[in-house]
Image (cartoon, rainbow, N blue to C red):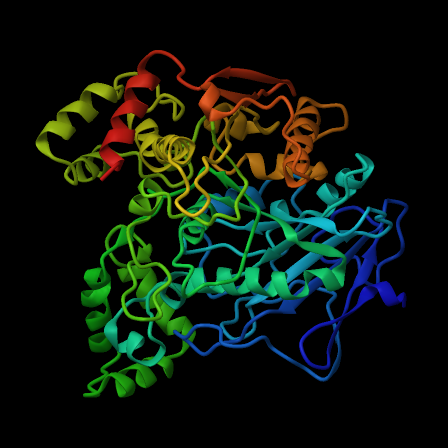
Length: 539
């Protein structure tokens, strides 16, 4: 075993990886017959934290001697939602159902590195924050595997390291109540604190793998982008580490998920106590009783009775607060991390189509319930902007409800945040950020392309170069090479010729594999819809 595959971590802990020279498969390449592809060094399932339920990570796990890091760890306790199933059922996606859920052993990360990388100094690092609505997801998802992206980066003579990781979800990651804060000083955002802990681990140890802790780019998709937006504006008095140099927000940012006042989920907590017959009188006793409830029972209750609007972030209070004010206020005042030198953010073309054929909630009663959250004036505006097309043959790409959801959760927030970041001075540095925007129009080569178009999350296998999903020489392969090269360039700090938001232009990645520079403003009804959301969300 080569010494380059053994890495020293905290204390006497040693992590031993392996070299994978085979094609992308469901299980790792360890122990399989050697292939003839460029080698990728992998360390899978490396623990970065092991806190008790509803506690923050306080120290880095240690172990004696070698830990064989040959396979993805267990995943956090969560269900499986339709969008995840859509990807798992696609031809070319290998089975990873062997990755089981476990509350106690899932806070791990995975490090991928070119086996033959030769680079002046340390390699730049890309860190991926997965999405899933803060409710589902994990780092071992097949279309999130960066093996082929690593090979592609090396083929371009721009090698890099990629890190993926798990964080706590749903009731285990986002339950909020003063009972929980009494012990730790903060409550409600354990999943976000896990992400900060993973980034701090990378700052401490990535140099042992050959990475540069001063050259880290974080990439968040959907809820992962929302999380990154909050971490960008965290309270740096209580989170002092420099965490990243650049960020990529893909179809997710402030507004994609809710940021709530502390008391929002208190009734849910009381429901928990009643459901599990907990009658303890002190905060400590109540928390200990809830910690004793089996994880599957907690999740089953939470999945049926989650807080209205789903899981989200909570404003923290007290001396240890890290997320202690509205993230929009943070942007307006320029209070983001001054270490960040550039932001890339954008959307796919058909963000909302998943709410039709995939989630099956494109129904008049659901749309009416959504409208009820807005003022009478706004309801009228929404009905004008999204006219009823129920008399037409159904098409998720033009459905009023699907367009409404895609604009409200993804396109509107991305536009609002890009405008704020590009026009506001960072208070600490006195400078404006260079902000780059993109639109992705690529589609998969299967039936989903006809019904879902360029659906939410579709860009991920293109960026990660998931070659098993398309044929050699196809338009999908061409598109993957183009967007993958742009992401690799961004990780290397290369953006020559890219238009900025200040230029009012964006990069458009087309289905045919081409990339153009086009006006951000767009045309027709889309302009009016996005203008409405940037105003409605700016509260």
